[in-house]
Length: 118
Image 1 (cartoon, helix red, strand yellow):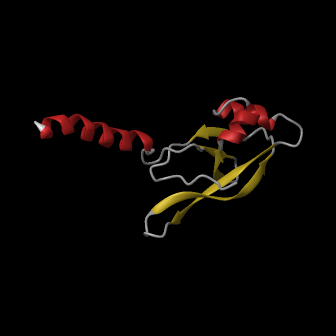
Image 2 (cartoon, rainbow, N blue to C red; image 1 turned 30 degrees about the vertical axis):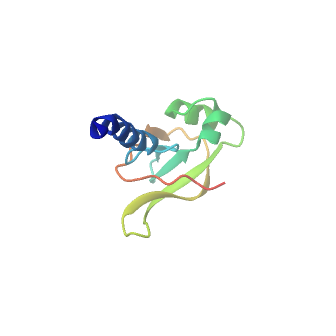
């Protein structure tokens, strides 16, 4: 009887743990690939950046580029974490300037993404 009473509690705890932890490749940071005729980089919008732009999609980056001075975002790069696994981590802040051959694409990371520290 005790086992039957504890089973729903155990199930709720396990499900709660999975719901609280982001899935691999998911984080509060939205990644995008910026493609130009010369190169491409991966950039990320933090929730603060998205709030400033009013959205968190490729259109928000395009709209931000049309403002005077362009747009400043985090550039992300792959690195090894302490355990030896790969992850995307913020490298530095970069300014994006409008250009006719610039393309913005959503980017889905297959490895964990580390959010920038304030």
